[in-house]
Length: 178
Length: 110
Image (cartoon, rainbow over all chains, first blue to last red; front, side):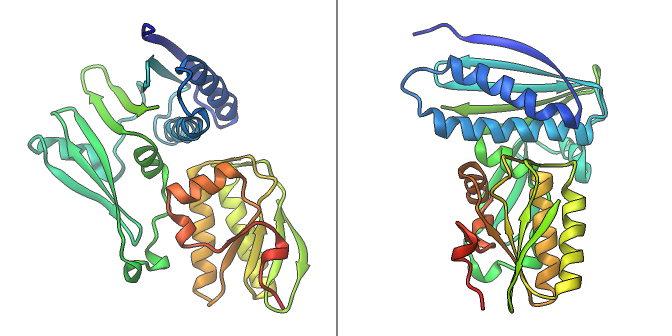
């Protein structure tokens, strides 16, 4: 079995640079994957995850640069996006960290999905998505218009957010099994 | 960004003339769709076959424009999605909300 491969990328945090950055990262990941992986299926997942991680950074971090640590270990792909920008707290999400480990909070709900945050530690939350399968509950007017968290959560096998108060460090971690 | 292709009695066919549909042009797209609806007062079928890249912000703009038209008993119909964009609509389950066709020829019209 091949040894894990890791690489850190320092990327500009601008709208204009996203497409080129995504392509560079995607090429790096796909080239490291074992030969038996369905690369088309994995490429789609990784591409949408990267697009949304980088777009999220532009919307929320307010920094000029963002760091990505990528590790590929066989079929396991880990992507950590780090920045020292604004604390990520849409809907005051980090206030959930006062709760006990395992506490689960509904973030958004519409006729298609329910999105939850689950407390993993006193600094980390995990995002979970459940599909709503009730056609009668599908009211177009209630549909959410923010899909970034949903896309990353559904395209990955695990998606967490951690905030290191002492360092002012935001870390978004994504795990995908190829 | 949006060019009118053909007006039928009960639907307007338009083409989205951009390769990258993103945070950068989502708000302008929504405003153009609403302007077109205000002018033509009918459902709009949008050909997206030129679009190679889309992000969640633009997806949100499409949904927002759709909601606006629905409130007037009209709708947004999508045409010519690439394989990856089709996959994104399936992932987000928006394929249960929007009518999606391969080409303008497949869109019901009078």
